[in-house]
Figure 1 (cartoon, rainbow, N blue to C red):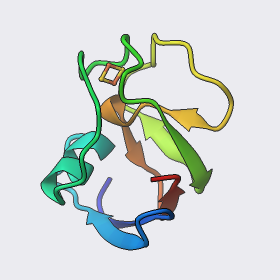
Figure 2: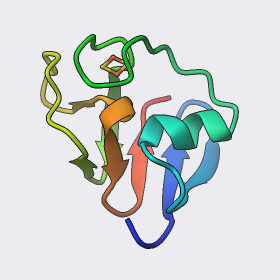
Figure 3: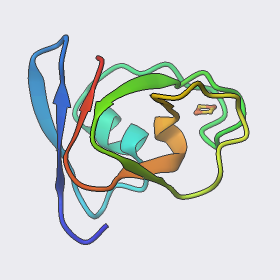
Length: 87
Ligand code: FES
């Protein structure tokens, strides 16, 4: 990701940015003090699973945990443009 992407958190009514220095979407959320549950940080436990409402993410590594359509694992993806999360 070369440019920052806008992340909208629908329930919290907040907006933040994922910057090029962030290694994952989870990194960007944590850098903005958003509490996200996690364990493995590498896509296999599913603990960080959340709903993507708008936009698209690119996986840095293929998620191994089972995810339903519309779910994402923020520990192993980055936004591909502006996104909205159900947080
Ligand atoms: S923290 Fe384990 S899949 Fe994201």
